[in-house]
Length: 129
Image (cartoon, rainbow, N blue to C red; front, side, top):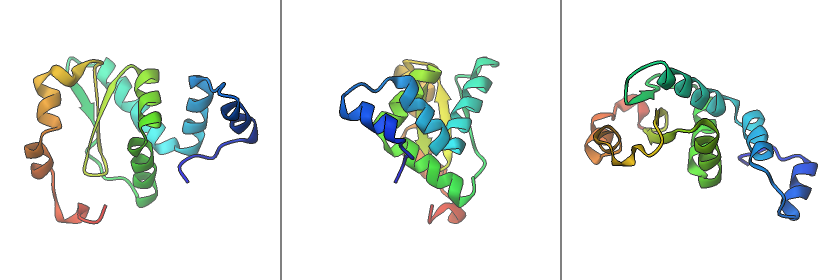
């Protein structure tokens, strides 16, 4: 299960009354590593002229599982992108990058998300992630 959903939030969802803030609070408490990583990358991006900020440190298995659950869900990824005002890109089950909004048309984003970049970012220790 990706999220620990409270009965009150589930009741709101059943009535189609879920606010982004409530959903994001559940994401933050259910997937703290993933939420914190997006927060940290966003803060780093804001303090530099770089086109993106990325994580190159492989997390623990539990942290990796949180990241995979967060980024495999369009609704969770979208909520994170809206909340932090970034575009996220993902490689190798741990390398997450935060780009400025609307970065999909930039060379940096296209390079990061290219098959070439994915192939060059492979390593034997990440084979089973």
